[in-house]
Image (tube, rainbow, N blue to C red; front, top):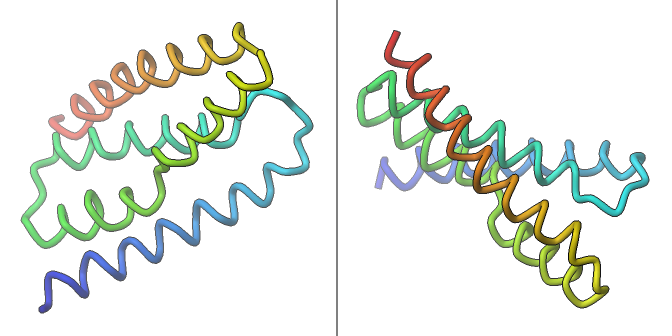
Length: 117
C-alpha cells in the first residue's frame, strides 16, 4: 500500500508540473509542439539520471515511476503526431518524431552518465 502512495504522490507532482509548463507554453505560437518536446527531453534526461544514480527503491519509485511518469507524456506526443499527420504537416511530423526519439535517447544516456558520476 505504501508503494502505491509513493508512486501516486510522485505522479500527481509530475502531472501538475507538466500541466503548469504546458499552460505557460500556450503563449508560444508555433505549429511545432515545443513544450511537449522539451518536457519529454528533460524527463528522459532525469530518468537517465535516476537510473544512473542507482537510488534506493523508494526514491526510484517516487521519482522514476511517479514524478517522471506523470511529467512525461507519451499520449500527448502521439496525439500531436496524429494531428500533424492529418493536417499534412509531414516535415514537422517526421522532424518531431525523429528528434524526440533520437534526442530522447541521447539525453537519457547523458543523464545516466551524470547520475553515475
